[in-house]
Image (cartoon, rainbow over all chains, first blue to last red; front, top):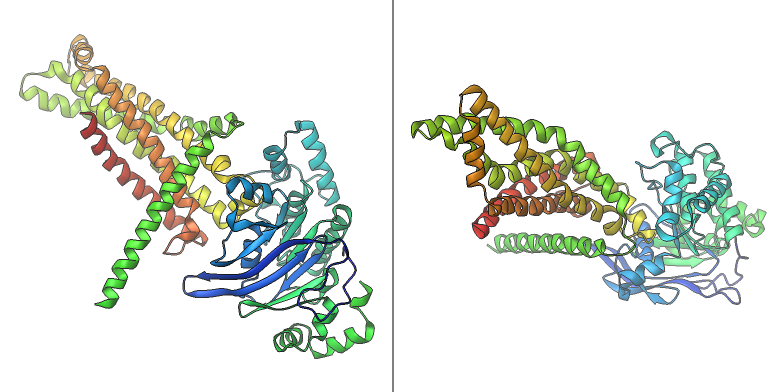
Length: 280
Length: 262
């Protein structure tokens, strides 16, 4: 976790620490797909260097929010700003410039299946930098070592386990030292030990690189330990965006229902008693 | 009545939207070709895939097409005592018409379907989204080399088809029916002019662009398919659509180009 949890637990968006600016802002974002209204006025701010976790039931549009932040989907109404620049008004070149700040770990890692592990991680370097092949090799090997993937350079994605694919995806997402990293269900389909491994890698790399993180996850309550802010998406709007402790104690009906459904009533009192999240 | 009008309106809007999307796809791809630095190696790799790997199929179909033309041509010309024109009949049919069209249809079956499936699977597995998020233009990185390769490979394959077809016609006409070899080649030499070669060349260039454009665009917009483009079934259905659409487009454009250049 990159920043101390804010004490201001009752605000919709916890106040940033001194010097922290908004990295991403979603302002009154609406989105329809056909006749289905998925987002109905989403307002959300992610502060630089912090970790925002978006939670909610399946099919609520959490990944759609990430796609808006990435500029892959345009809102029907409202705006999405990254470092103050409106993605909707950006041309293709400007959008590409903004995206140079991004790293993305997709739900299924989205590795290029006809390329080796090495080539997957090297691709952003080959396409976006003018470094020599030797520099690229050194950089890729460093990232693969960071992910404990030495010896897998020549394997293809189909030859890797789910956890290894995620790690290769993370290596590729981090290879250009992005300012913002998006994680779409980073631990879905992984067992507990592999999930913990991904979280450890996230924690380690965020400490090293200091990036802003946006995580969509179902892994409640474990994911709260990594979060500075937790936002609940339900009925097309962000119901609350609070610190993890405040989120668990919130009396907002939707948040209350979500916490009880995912963590159980007992968990809340345990968390309160143990001060579990205050220790993070 | 209202629902019928609604359906007609919705169908019309859908086709306009799809056509516009396909048009923008082609424009973006063409613009991306001129972005520097030029990437030569991916184009060579695609020329190898679309062109070199199709050579055997083209040799085979070209030879048999020429042989059939030799058989049919000899049978028809003999009725008028004009067997000496067999060379010109075979060469003109191949160079102006059958060479470009049959080559394009063969390449659609072999490479067009593969291009659509490859791009479609990349779309389904978020690989194209991943490219965009890495600030790598998918049009430039993924589509442009294929389009360029199509335009380079089709005229070359068509030339091979024409030559091997003429040899096939020669084998049947001269070897089987005893037409004079001199008459076969002299007739061809006298009747084939640059305009015939030009027509074949123009057709093969246009077909090369058409088949890659349609195949790649269908795969690229797989997720927007109305019938549902997701999953293995979606890829298979879209690939079939791409093959049918590009084959029809080749035949329609064949007529248009012929009527313009004739």
